[in-house]
Length: 338
Figure (cartoon, one colour):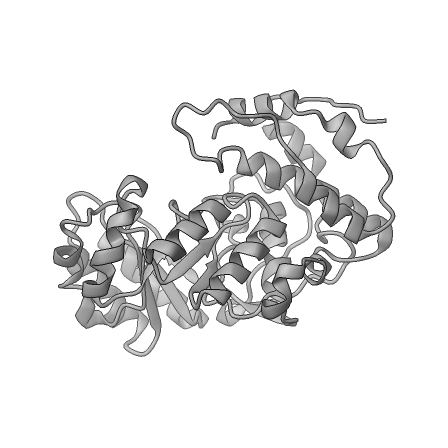
């Protein structure tokens, strides 16, 4: 998806008939969002999940507005989705993961040491970059971050089902808890056989963007965990359904985040993490460190130990910095709804 495809799909969708009525409760808003249909995106080989970022943006806008009107936080939505019964859990505190992206060895060591001193319970390390020595990088992370802390990997589709065992074999001694999206989506079905031999739990990310992907993964046995990212997965409600589906199938799931996501999406993730149980790892709330233009005013940063408190204010609990929003805006669409 791009800015152009997102705005194009938004402009072609009939919002007048879908959003032009009255909503008396947050339950009404949830029902409306579940019925919501976007204009068909050009297929061009794209999967059914194409347009999920648009759906997520509109859904969060509706839920935020209605939550503000009725005095309910976004996390209340979890109690209104029937599929979520088995995974509902209220938490006052969330613990976030640390993430180490592609960078030089010295920077990796410094970042891992800082995360250890800061008390993060677990970290994710990007691997599979061309020309890099993954065994050396993982070994360095294990030595610096500590022998008893959770360390997982993200290969970002860098390997194949043919070489996955070879790539993972030198990394297994470092007690890896999982590897995320090791092969391209086009080859994901091959993981059904390979994952039985590699001895490391497999997490799907690029291959887990909607309910169709989830059912396929469960039926074909291609993974052990789902990486749920609200924007990637089509919004708060569908992410709840995906978490419930994983739970019912005996699979794990983490709450991921978009690369460089703003505080708006991070706040939605915080509400999700505070109302859903069984989440293996939680990522996000990094906007202060990753985004050049912060779009929100309130500080909702992670504290020592990766800890953060749940948001209790009505709606999402963030206030936009209109000056910054205007400064980074590339294009606007105005769609009046009666």
